[in-house]
Length: 121
View 1 (spheres, rainbow, N blue to C red):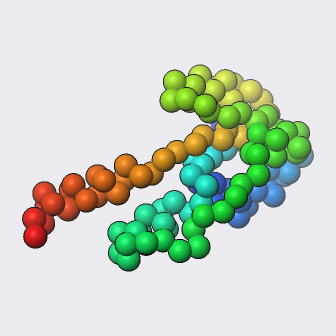
View 2 (view 1 turned 90 degrees about the horizontal axis):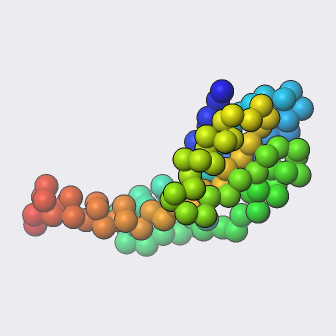
């Protein structure tokens, strides 16, 4: 089994490869960490400049997108659902996409707190 973990922005850059996985019947599971944008880039911009630019965008419905190619599509709606959905997807013998919403806002709070501990200016 193959598990690919990527952000929604990264997935959107190579989403067409889902067709290849379906055509070749490759049991690849793609777990999309969906924050509605380029989260890592936005996080770096916020840390350095105090604001972000050009990092937010709208996504397709990834479940319907997967199904349109003939793959399985799953959506995580709560933290408790992630493990069972992932296990089920990995047990299937077909390509699958898991849409998992994430909120990186806690990263900024953690970074600020660690900065105060490491370099209390």
